[in-house]
Image 1 (spheres, rainbow, N blue to C red):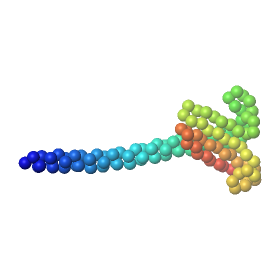
Image 2: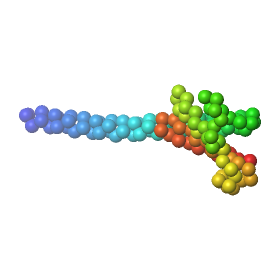
Image 3: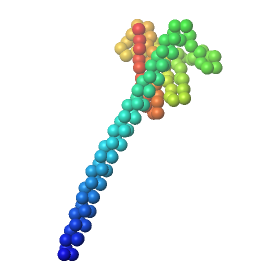
Length: 124
């Protein structure tokens, strides 16, 4: 009769071990998925910041020049703008440095959000 009590305890521990390993495996997969979703969100935010840089560069070209917050003309046609949630940088480069080579110029803008970078290049 004592042998049966020990086997029930052993069987219960084995079942609990199997359930625990299944739960831990599922939680590891869930954590990985959450990190991927967060990375996608950061990527989208960085892309929109880069898009903001393109829009600002186009506006500067439209009005004939750009100036920084201090009122100075931006040297080398580059600007970095830091916002509360990220930053973007854009650069106006001549056509020979664009991909593919263009006639006049192109705008290269990079958005940075939580360490994630996305770049956009537009040209004529």
